[in-house]
Amino acid sequence: MNYISLSKNDLNKEKDKMLKKYEELKKLNLKLNMARGKPSPEQVNLSRAALDAVNSKTNFITKDGSDCLNYGVLDGLLELKEIFTPVLGVNKEQIFVGGNSSLSMMFDVISFFMTSGVCGSEPWIKQGQIKFLCPCPGYDRHFAILKHFNIKAIPIIMTNTGPDMDTIERLVTNDKSIKGIWCVPKYSNPQGITYSDETVKRFARLKPAAKDFRIFWDNAYAIHDLTETPEKLLNIMTECEKNNSKDLPIIFCSTSKITFPGAGVAFLGASENNIKEIKKMYSVKTIGFDKINQLRHARYFKKYEGLINHMNKHRAILKPKFDIVVNTLKNEFVENKIISFTEPKGGYFVSVDVMDGCAKRVVDLCKKVGLVLTEAGATFPNGIDNNDSNIRIAPSYPSVEELKTAMSVFCVCVKLAVLEKILEN
Ligand SMILES: Cc1ncc(COP(=O)(O)O)c(C=O)c1O
Image (cartoon, rainbow, N blue to C red):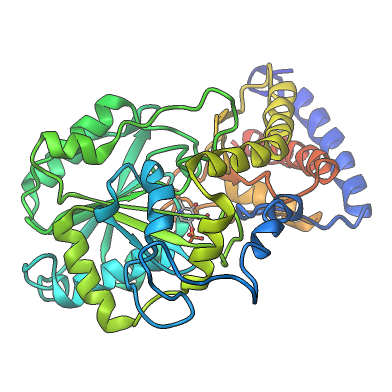
């Protein structure tokens, strides 16, 4: 059935049918959550053995002779850097290993640049109203950092090869107040888009008007593949080296969705110049991060191949969940073209666009029957989705059974909201 071509009479009949289904759902007292991209308990349990990788009997002396039980080694353990070199796509000298969260490192770096400037430039806070480019839909917590520092967010349209590079090039080359851009280059949050080779090359070729412009390359889903044929992201650092622009990118990733969210290890990759600067600033903030946790991760994974084997186990748990979401949407909306959605090959989200003006209503309808979704608008700066159409679905946390129920609730709510909208117009 295609709602767009129905008569008013038939639309009303269909709406009554959906209302009846909705009332039935209410009686179930459901408590479901597809809001945040959290690994499920089953996934987190995959890493329990890592907790045994160090204990009271462990030799805590690292490869280069440092003692993990004491102060020191601000930039992190060599053995861990070696394992993560291919993930970050930089060499060991270009890695800084941090604490438990890459988001907090992004916050730190922006905070450092605000107060101390970027490699000798005037502190951002002294430069008046500065701006960041924000490919949209995007990650709400990136936007929250900008809001915190009063940095103006400029939305940039996403295409299926990455953000709109024509606009980015035009803005960045002409406006000195643009200091950065957020990028989630592989399996982007929420659309699951991997930037094309050409997009990465164009980023590396950028000639920003601002000398203190940086690309915040948040590669949070670098190895979070859902298929056996991962999408390939071109190495930004290699491209930048070719273009003499290696100070542009600052790369982030973490083990939050590899081992323990909130208790993993975060990494930053950047040129020697940037690393020197960031190290200098971190040396004021801390004497060093948690090396026991770093050693635990290094001893558990042993090498890059260990990491990839571990990710295959995550994939086996996650893939069926993504299949439920995508297949349900396909089945429910095959003729009824009132939504479009992504079919990601990795990452943590499915992005759904419902008919304009319906996203808030869908999220609200879901909430009232016990299904929590990410707030509508959250994927845009300041929570404003001008079309009120984007909804982010996070399938990882619920069990397979819960997810099936959640998706049937979601579909009823989408249909109801869209029927209301068409009838209203
Ligand atoms: C794009 C992106 N970056 C960063 C994070 C948070 O990472 P961390 O736990 O390392 O702070 C997330 C979590 O959902 C994310 O989606």
